[in-house]
Image (cartoon, rainbow over all chains, first blue to last red; front, side, top):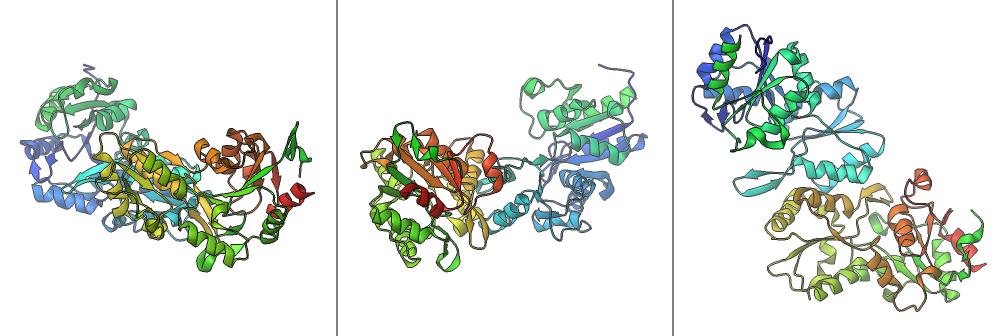
Length: 258
Length: 269
């Protein structure tokens, strides 16, 4: 363990790390409070393409976590930063709940397309509209390229297939912004004014959380909750800085290291 | 136009023609579309000269009968037997391989499949369904594929887009891609640029592929596809043609002509 190295910033995944659906993972609320009493900078980082920050904050606070909107950094936040940095006026292929985060982004006369999980946009008319914008040298940004997701009724198509369709039609390659992309973690760090080698990422996804964070020099703690499956700690050739049973154990370890 | 080496290649004199329809004869669109300047006369001259030809299309948005009527209304001298389309090809393919399709196709072509068993599907056939490409319909096809031991997707052509009178429209290819990416499979293409399809379009002519020329507005599917089968391939500057097509990294047309009329002038000279 790289003991002795300074720790000044903690990034925390949400779903699967602090809670699973509407259930708090035991000890997480109290552990987060203890973490807050240190001087560490905190950011909650999550891949979502269909929920605004406000919705996420509401959910967390209803579960008993005290979280503020500005502490949340999502793949939509990363998309927004990329769009503004590159003067892209995006056509938003996003569900209404996610559009909320883009209220202050200019979208008239679009010169790019931003794709999230948006069943309402995944149809012939809207795809044609996006295709025409991209054909005009527009940029294509994907919140992520997931193939499908599970619903109560079964499997449903994710944004990946539709991003890939637009790539095929136009020859334009999408820029992907969510975890595990380096630019996601970089922007999250910038938002909290943190340094990669002083940052620890806590998450349940070996590839998206740990692999992505460690690729830019952070340390990753894998928790064995949420989507964690036996053997993940050595999967994808990624070696986590540490593995803990739950968030509360990760917090114990961090406080010990301070 | 380059010298007419595309008309005479060594001793291989040009003896037969495959013509793409959309973007070469006409641009499709609302109220039947629009004939491309000079194409009605050009086709009439070929027919008058009894030049062996077939209209080789990836059209799967309407039935063959509807397509023939549409072309006739625009003034083209076209009969059903002139046309080789993926709808004809896929039906024989389904029957030969005991395949029962789930159809994700345009409502207007469903009738073509009434005599094909569609119960308990063991493949998905995707065509240019246009407005029928809804999230629900794509999801249904996806779910059916995911429930198969070996998902089988058959795509009626794999074109990226085509020109309509009011602009470019997505073709079937991107929507096949949706299912390919989601299921991590590769679709089997019935239509251009598949070799089987080109060969079947030539069948019955008794002319070697080397004596045939394909004229189309799709540099990859028409020109490249035909060349890969030993035919010559000529690109027209109509339909979805874009100047960048002339510098395509993979495909070099045997010639580029302004339109069908110009090609036919040279052919009948």
